[in-house]
Length: 145
Image 1: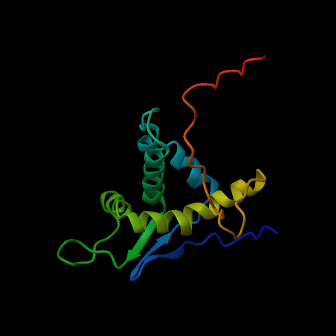
Image 2 (image 1 turned 30 degrees about the vertical axis):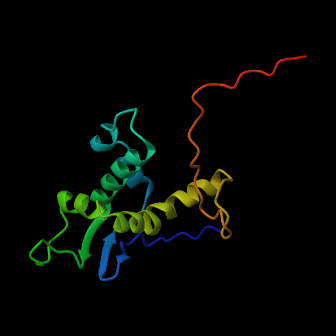
Image 3 (image 1 turned 90 degrees about the vertical axis):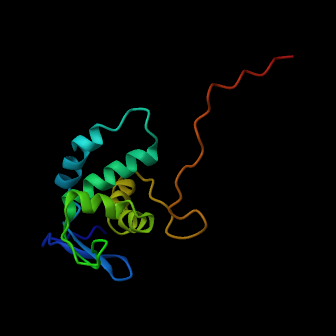
């Protein structure tokens, strides 16, 4: 059963020990706005999926982050979220992964469910993604003999 959160309130997400962010709900409007973000549209067509994922995550975070705790400058002084600071935060690999898992993937899992392609809830392939690269060219047809 699909559970609707009719309050649509921001929620706190823990990204690392002592680091948490308050994020807007992951709504259709937020995803559509992110897809048309200039930084996302500027990603070259030949860019890898990973490069696209980083650009999208940063654009989404710039729209979604309302507040945070446990984040400071090089002197240890707490700083407020800004586009530059949000991008720098997501440049930290464990933070990027936590953001993807706790925020982005929850919306994408629902998208996959409607396409009947949701990952299995358990087992060695739970949540696995395709890692094979496309073939460079088609295989030759076998000779008939």
